[in-house]
Image (cartoon, rainbow, N blue to C red; front, top):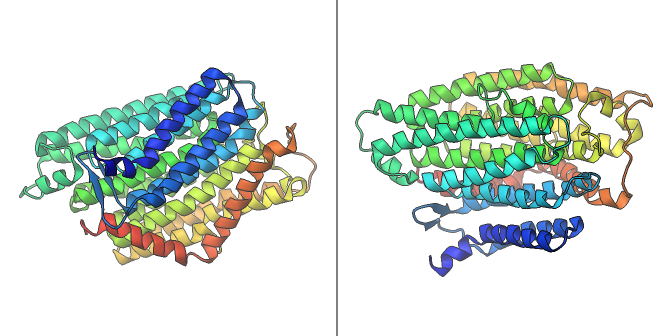
Length: 484
């Protein structure tokens, strides 16, 4: 490696060093606040280092990585999301008796795995990033060992991740058998030489789609996703819903564009079925839930279906729509799960409908922020979610995906019901509802400020989306222009 390689990998190297420093500090003395501060500073430093990296031209660290403006944008999005989750975690874990410090090591390593996936241009680096992310999440999901359903959620995620890795590896092996290479760009070049697509190649791609489906939790690979959301600690649930899914979507975009995956009708048909099924089944099952975490889990399945509508467009506008929608979804999901985190106590998370009954009259600002997040998820105007859905619809219309556009519009109407149901519960005029035995108010100051900033950002992006759109248009050219 040369010096430039270290400069371009600086965000990842900072995360590696942060995990080592955190581990050494824990070995000397357990002190939750110090570990928390080290984690925040390391994530901020990793994000700041992105501005020292040149992004005019893609930089290749062959054969594993490519760092371009697309990768840097997603790394920045992942780091900021991870920072928000870390900021929400202090008050949540401070009120629990379990040893808290190792949580931050796993948190940093999971963030590192997602960043590696984003810059991957090779099967080896893809699998390395995926496993670092997955193994860290095993521990994060089951971290609160004394809690009911925590171990169950961890074991179920372990099974899901193992299935995902198995299908991905088998699919990679078949693709390698046909092309003789594991680099994304080289695979695309090798495939362009075939007059007819070999059946074994389609089988390999299909198995990789199954592996990605398990990781994204889309239908029909979604069965245990709500159980994982319900059993995991609330900050970890926020991490799974955003960072974990975002890293895989970015990787999927790069892989399909580099290998010309949109030229295979069989793959497009598979994704079309997955997209429609995810939208309908996610929304319909969410209607049947009374647990807020499970509602948001099924909602995330539907939202990934919306993302796949733009993904199937397979053009520059589609990549832009996916990226914008993910930004809006990250802001909204972090805010929604952040409020669940804020309202949780040492016994259990605030996940039942009764926990929110009359919240408007007990904690009006918290209820207002949660209402804004839910309206954004529903795609109501003046929120980031509305602009995101409009962007996705524009991508679908431009490529004549009329069936997908109609399905998205119909499912947006269905989804509106269960979001309004939660809002209605908060507006009940009653003294019922669960109040937390709070720690010192200063412990929740950072969490409260974080949620307030997310709410403001949510409205700002919904009212003034132009600057974010222009930024996304600039960064998507680096990944989409060569292939399209």
